[in-house]
Amino acid sequence: MKNIVIGGAWPYANGSLHIGHLAALLPGDVLARYFRSKGDQVFYVSGSDCHGTPITIRAREENSTPEIISEHYHKEFCEVFEKLGFSYDFYTKTSDSRHKDFVMQFHKKLYSGPYIEERTVNQAYCPNCKKVLTDRLVVGICPACGSETRGDQCDVCGEVLDADTVLDAKCANCGTVLTFGKTTQLFLLISKLKNELCEYLNSHPYWRKNAIAFTKRYIDEGLRDRAITRDLDWGIKVPKDGYDDKRIYIWAENVLGYLSAVSVLCEERGINFKEVFGDNSRHYYVHGKDNIPFHTIILPSLLLAHGEGLHLPDNIISSEYITLEGKKISTSKNWAVWAKDLAAEYNPDSIRYFFIANGPENRDTDFSFHEFKKQNNASLVGAWGNLVNRTLAFAVKFLDCQVNPAIVDADIKERIRQLYKSVGIKIEKGTFREALREIFEVVRFGNTYYDAKQPWKTRVNNLEDCINTISNCTYLIANIAILLHPFLPFSSSKVSEWLGVKNKWEEQDIGVKIIPNDISILFSKID
Image 1 (spheres, rainbow, N blue to C red):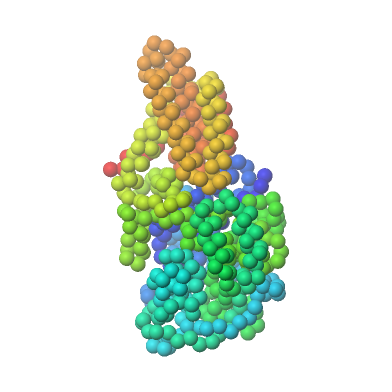
Image 2 (spheres, rainbow, N blue to C red):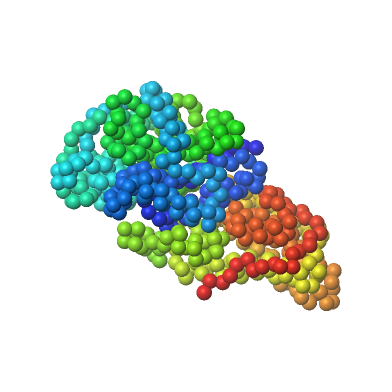
């Protein structure tokens, strides 16, 4: 049994989740459910990012406080994740006292090492608003790609920025040209870790192409040291004398949420934290491509600088973007489909199916309601739901609710055994679309087999053949339900309960089964 850490990106608690978040985060739940069914010890963690300037901006706009705003969206996130079946072992928030304590202790250790340096740097100031500005409140031109950007990160090219490097820098609130004063901050000396980061990147050739390309670009362009403190009043205190009026910069504490959440689980389970962040473990980090540098440069740098040999990320599951009806999602222009609305309206497995089957694994993919309806009706209603309902309803109506899947064709059994191996490999590699496609090939094979065998005819002229047909189909259904459980947990759990099979990643070689006489429809058509 291995320790499997799965970290889902922490969404900012300053606005509702949209379909882009779902597409990026759903692979984490697939991984968690799969590894649990294999018997591994899973630590599936995430939380709401409750600090940072976006939340203070939202609070000011609504005449509220960062605490109230972040708590409102944290609760909304929890409700959405629950409705869609996200099986987090621990979903927390960066404002949790346990996270704050962990981060402060981590930083104390960090400050005692050779990778932290105090520097005097430029600090943005708006002469019109008469206040110091955080990076998020600085707007201008990205020095890397020439696009309009904010002062923390360019949304177009992904460049992580410092406010004083932004060209034509202005105040986001009033548009005034900024001046720059001086302030003292603590810096993480990432440039000193270049050799370690190069070696780390080269040892992971199986990452997705965007993760490799982004990380290589950051290294090749020259790693820059980054401030880990800021002049803020909303965030985690800096555990160092003379820094009472400053807070730990958000990127230097939110990525440590994976560690703080795992530490809570370790305490609850009676497990040594260093064992989980040691050798007998495998770590997955699941997020969108705009978060790549924070997981392949920033987090590894913090772990290396900490100096206690903490486990670095193994698998980077970094998605491309989801577009909406052919156009880029824009929350500021209200061009989005909100996750809470989708979850309230549709079957959760229908939502999960679409965003996994069309996951933006290697390129941007598009969401449209027409395509969502089409795929639900064809694949879930017409293929999987049809196979389940026609088979089990037949057994109830014509075979006295009894089937005997022990008498299964050898070639069908072998196909299922190979399917477990193949799908498992694909899930572990992060190729979820291909894994789901392969399972549905067998679903369609089951329907073709049923049609060819014509049990509605053989029940009259060859009852033994009819029983064999339904038994083979029931065997297929039982195993497909287990294979689909990481992807479609709600419908798969129903089928597993009907057939009395346990969610274990291995062939379900079941014997005589009594089918419940109240089999329900798995999926409904979307009109």
